Image (cartoon, rainbow, N blue to C red; front, side, top):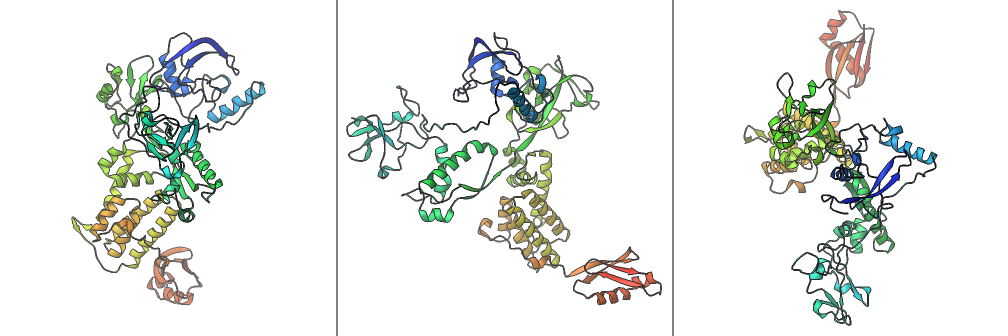
Length: 591
């Protein structure tokens, strides 16, 4: 594929007829189109593709280049709209008002009905070209004899990259390995020798291409099983022990690349008898995307005047992305900063709201440089720390769902970590007690252990963070500083906030890393209730509550209730008709 920053193309003078509408479409030759993709000819839609958009913009006004038609109810004044959802079609004939799925189904239906074509599923796996004409990559252990490739013997492996003076192709156009001085194969002596000795009799040239990046990424987990084995990629003992990967977490974009190649390599190695596992990964989770909150300024159509969001009313405006760094937490735009950022709007006029502020609009979109809504994690770490960033990302929502980022919400997580840290201190001094914890304190701890264990097993990290917050608030209320509670608390939070956990572990007097400490064990006995606060009602109305042992027989409960002075006051000297005891729940006195 050509470098899309350098746009080139030429109009052929020919036209194609759109089978759906009958429109004449100009045919161009462009170097960014992949010859091997489909038939080598593509339908360019500038409104919905960044490269088509750049191509059409570059040749705007040239012969054979029509104006860009916006087929979406979204702004494309700055960039193409590339999402597959969140829009309705316009300027699209019989597809107007439909979304992506509706329009796809409709156009296929119409094309089949008219006999022009037939719907077919195309799979994106393309023939994989294995060679790369660059220096960095695994060298291919092949030499050429009489024009035929031969593999190097096992004794020559691993073949290492030779030293070169420069990483550019040779003057003859060979790959960079052609610059190597020691990179030829002596068949007689079975070793790498100088290229000056190549005679095609006993010394032969080696392959000058290297392997692609996915050559290693398609089987790396197998090498991890026995990384220091110098005789084979992994011993049978290691392969039998580890088998395959328990869990693979990655983006859905890997589905048509890395994961396909990995399965292919794994199945090939299985068929050849090198490994036993049929699949490379036992379980796969696609993590949800962190979405960005974009900021928009509104330009009155046909003018260089921007109007604050609240002043728009029924005016026709064009929404333009603004860099989120120019907007504060109150959605107020730094106008001078915006003018410096966009010099083409340096002379623009801004219509403000009644408070003299310019208020921007917001929309949740994919985080992208082109939408100017990217939040740099380095900046977050600098201001709040890496642990806060980790916890907040987990707290945003379920692992597999897309989640909108909101920097304003991170202060809550930051405050929680400060509360957690302060459990171990009294002011600036460490305050840890070796007293035996109370039943209530043990119950708080083991409720948390049970929840965190379950959430880790089910990848529900967001609810774990909520459980930590609840536990910390409860411990703070009762001013708990017991070692038997705070030590396991530090271990529990260590997978979530490792840096603060390590520091607190040291504060607790330990020298080894907290990452090597056994995870706390949940004990059910601490959650078993031994007493119950019974609500006592008279003719269905609760009058008071009383704490009683849960193992107390109903007859004993009745005696205690009748002897209570609050019951006597309700009865007024009269005997009750009936006392109903629902064990562990309620006592009802019928008067």
